[in-house]
Image (cartoon, rainbow, N blue to C red; front, side, top):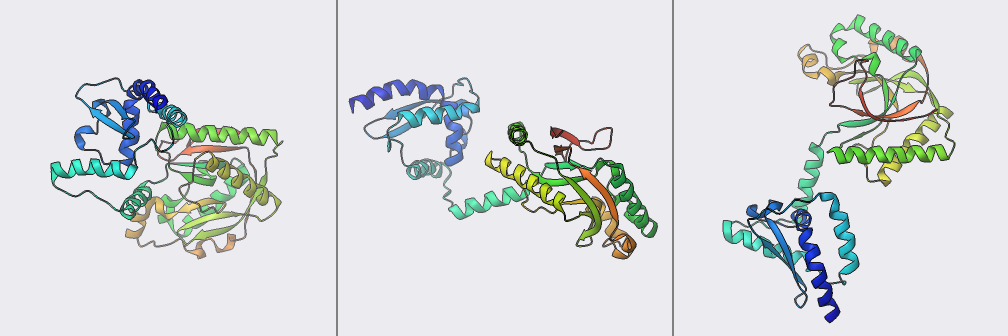
Amino acid sequence: MDSLKKSCQILNPFLNVFAPVMLTSLKQNCKVSSQHQNPRRFCFVEMNIEKKKFYLRYCARRPKILSTNLTDQVTRYASSQFPKGLHDDKSKKITNMQKGKNRKRGKPTKKTSQEDSGKKMARRKRESPNYFLAIQITEDEIKRNVREIQEIILAKEENLSTAMIGIDTLHLTLGVYYLEDGFSIIQIKRALDKFHSQLKAADFVPPCFKVSSLGHFNHKVLYASLEENQGLEELNTLVNGVRTSLENDGVFTADDRYTPHVTISKMSKDMNRLRKLGVSRIDPSHYQEKRTAYFGQQVVKSIQLCAMNVPKTESGYYYVEHEIMFS
């Protein structure tokens, strides 16, 4: 016990220095009253070794705010120094803080885990993807044949002009992602670079896939399919590899579905206008004679991290946040 008391004397100053960071972690797990939401009001921590509890003290002064990237350092140091079972029970800590809030406002704040998980799921659904991994279509033969299909359709239904995909933006989508902030962007960049290094070490040879025949998603999206051959198998192996590698580094797709295709026309680009004009789908009869058309082949030159909500570049293509190149 004497040794633990001595450890507490050493640790208390350490905890006080990292107090703002600890409050950030506390807010994620506990209901903190509004007057204590600001980490600037969080001043110091005391530890009672006999009761095995932390006491959180507040004041109106404003100590220096430390960067939140020190959280991991706090966790590692505390885990190595605190004996097992020294931390106060989380449920008791939450209950005590909730009681203080209830006495002030007179309203119960207890929520079930199902309600909390439901809110998390709802928030995740509202978070639309803002980045995607892509393989850019650069071969002129494919672009030329896609343009020909678009012109054939427009000759029969000119109202679909706003639904056509720009030739300069043609690409193959590998996965869509929601990146919340700059840290998330840096995280996925590092993960991509790590995957790139693994490919180099394995003497990776970029696959070559062929674009052939037309397909659709519920007649709302018209796309060019990829021919089933060894090139497609190698492409799928590459896609599964990069997605798995990102997941291992904590970066997950916003949509697990993956159907390799090159989009030609998409009604969602101008759905409201098209509905008003009475256009409810892309009629298959508009492109019937080109259903089995061959578009060309494309060698995978790179994997790009493209931004959805950033203006396109002067070339007409998406803004590329990051790219790993293949020789």
